[in-house]
Amino acid sequence: MDRTRVRRELGLGSEHYLVTQIGIRSWKGNDDTMDAMKTVATRAPQARLLFVGANEAKAKILREKAAARGLADRTHVFLYREDIPEILAASDVCVDASYAVMIEDPGRAVAMARTGRKRVEAEFSVTAKIDRTEALYRLLLAAKRLA
Image (cartoon, rainbow, N blue to C red; front, side, top):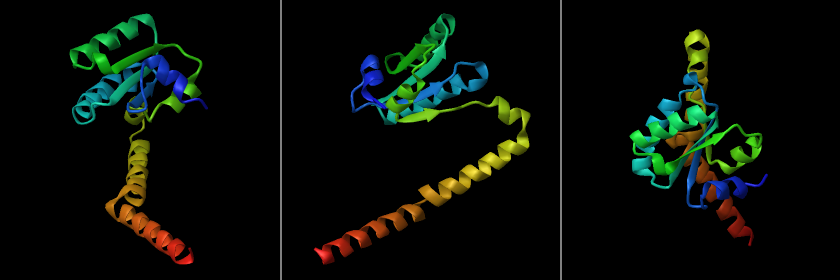
């Protein structure tokens, strides 16, 4: 999948970090995503935000909301697109801030939260990072001994 075509279309270089949200609906959490980007932007000036799937009216509203948050220069909006795989390939992270399913099914929300927490603890905790770093060092030392 070509990562560069969409990034060129957006005027982004390899130094930019592209956060993408597919779908423009009130229940998709677009405002929450923009609020989060405002926080991220202060710490990561290379971050850019892309919304995909707006109609003309919603694109205008999204651009106005981005400008009101000081994010006009780092927020892009695509109208309806059929090249979603290429857009996702161009993205560094994809956000889904939907909340309607969570409101309608609190049991599922709790289960998803527990599953997410377990995954974060298993894969991204300090302990997990230390374990992976130690494993890498052991591998490198073993390879050096064989060389």
